[in-house]
Structures are given as C-alpha cells and as structure tokens.
Image 1 (tube, rainbow, N blue to C red):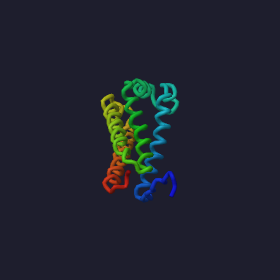
Image 2: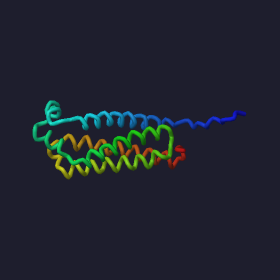
Image 3: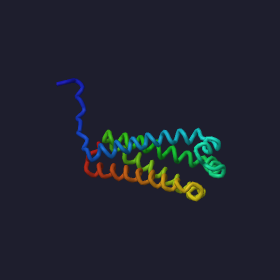
Length: 148
C-alpha cells in the first residue's frame, strides 16, 4: 500500500476524445485569430484584401466586442481542454464561451458587419455552431457520468 494513492483513471471514450480534440484544435486556431485581431490595423486589413470601408468598419468596433471575443475563445479553449480531461467544470466554462460567441454574433449583426463583410456571417455562424456542439458534447458526457 502506498502512502499516496494514485488517482483512478477512467478511459476516455473515443466518441468524446475525437470531437473534443478537434474542438480544442479549432479553439487553438481561434486563439491565433484573436491574436491577429488584437494587432490588426486598417492598413494590415487592406493588405489582406479588405476595402478601406471594410477595414474602417472592422477596426471601429466597440471594445466590448473584443471582450466577448476573448471570453468566447478563451472559454472555448479552456472548456474543451477540461472536456478532454473529463472534468465537470467543462460544462459551465463552455456555457460562458457560447454566451460570448453569441454576443459577438449579435454585435457583428448590430454593427452591420455581415452586410459589409458577407463571409463574416459564415465564419461566425460556424464558430457559434462549434461552440454549441462542444457544449452539447459536454452535456452528453455529463449525463452519461463520464465527467468527474
């Protein structure tokens, strides 16, 4: 008998590992996109193909939208990592992430970004769908008592 018992490990089911791993990779890509977002200027955006009007609209968004982007991407990254570790805390973290992304979607819509940058609608719709699917996966794992 050891003085410090080793924690019991539960094998992660493949139905959890594969999508949670893919979602974590997606969120790490999101962190990279967030870093780019923080450092972009109208000039850098125009160098990537935006018009002057598009770049001006994109860089003039209110600060709260940067905050909800951060909440979404940081929460998604932490939440999917927790999900891979089979932690119950993944559920509330992924809820917060989804709320952040829905707020970002609403802000883009309210500020007319979807009209100015039509691809933004497709991109952000995908982001919200993946955040919702990640939360759904966490809830499914929770109900199956996979998370501890």
